[in-house]
Amino acid sequence: MPSSIALYKTILDTFQAPVSRFDCGRKCAPLNEGTPVCCDVEHAIPLVDKHEWLLLKSRTDLWRPYRARDEQAKKELADKHRDCRAVECKGFMFCERDNRSLACRAFPFFPYITKDDELIGLSVFWDFADRCWVQSNLQIVEPAFVKECIAAYELLFDSDAAERKANRDHSAAMRRAFTRMDRLIPLLGRNGEYLGIEPRTHKVRKAHWREYGRNETFKDEKPAPAAKR
Ligand code: SF4
Ligand code: SF4
Image (cartoon, rainbow, N blue to C red; front, side, top):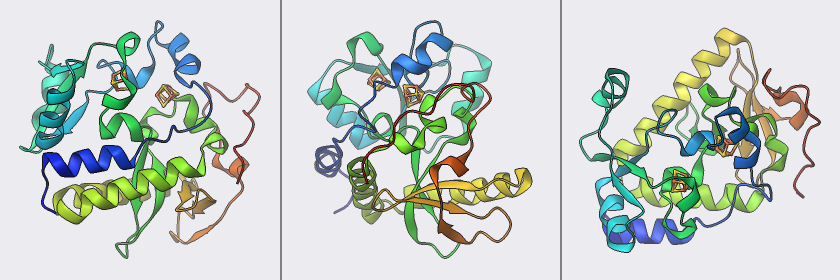
């Protein structure tokens, strides 16, 4: 199926599971003047595909086009693909669960693609590790979330090679960054299992969630209980 409004409807219908049973916004919002970090355009400007935008616009007035307010935002958007639209929602107090974008549903995760071009699980947008509580508590992630997220992205990739390439490139950038830091890449496998990618060899292996490390911001907190696997 080529990218279309119908495809995005199927994708969003496929991907409904929450990341975890925690309201993680309550964990990071106190660090960000009361707003969950990933719902704040000062931290992340939402991007949606043009068909996703048409679908959301037909269902809700939650979203509107985003206008860059400063040079930094303009710079951030300069490289966006021509089929992407920068948008913003009315704010977390008005969130409509069924009308969240694909990126909202997936955050802080992205589909990880190996050097051999295989989608083997989900890893994290590590740039947000200092503000995103979930990334210091990956044991809370529900396997159903991982499965639905991967299924949604596979539907998308079947029709959008550029989107797949962008995630493949992002995975490669993560390998380079984690090699420099000499850190295990955290990875949730297709069934939610804990995996890790060795920083030097890029070999995938089983891991314990305690190996993922915790950001300074959250390291003194007691780890949250793990989801059932
Ligand atoms: S996913 Fe991360 S940044 Fe977003 S609300 Fe949860 S803890 Fe905060
Ligand atoms: S739609 Fe909901 S989850 Fe997405 S940015 Fe807005 S408040 Fe956050």
